[in-house]
Length: 204
Image (tube, rainbow, N blue to C red; front, top):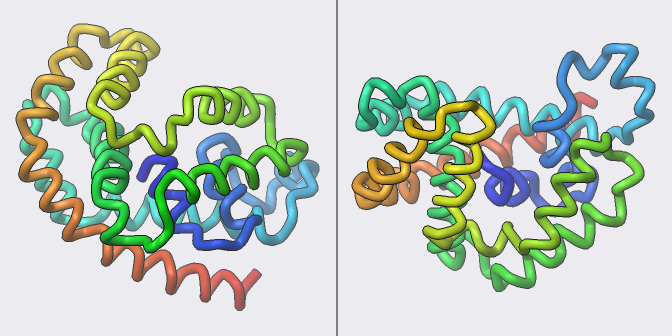
């Protein structure tokens, strides 16, 4: 899952929403001394744990593995990256199927919450939040041009420019089957996330 999906799956609790972001920026056991030193609230720690549980659950879904296998073998190593991004693309384009709130209003609310909790974030997360806010990325993940730019930038960062340029062409050729499968899979992931949030509320 990429950022918009992770925020959406985190529900409406602010701590969970912050944790949905920090799940990509804080590594290691939540009980470690390094993470304990951050003095994160229970809600934020729950959100980080939820983020990790969702990623693990999604990685094990057979249908997603089948979608990844539609890519050329040279791209299999990076299939999780491309599918994560595609979920946000799907979610933006089909938002009203999964949430009654206007997408722009929802994204603005998420950015407001994140900015109110900047003090809880490591510098890497703060820098990402600046880009997320400045470029209004959450509400623009449904644009092909944005997805293409992100994939190409990742290719530069990973020193795989030619390979990720190839991936752009392949992914848009696979848009129809990937879209229908992700639309079908997402409600199951929502059910998993809802149940996991309830479980974390009882165990943390």
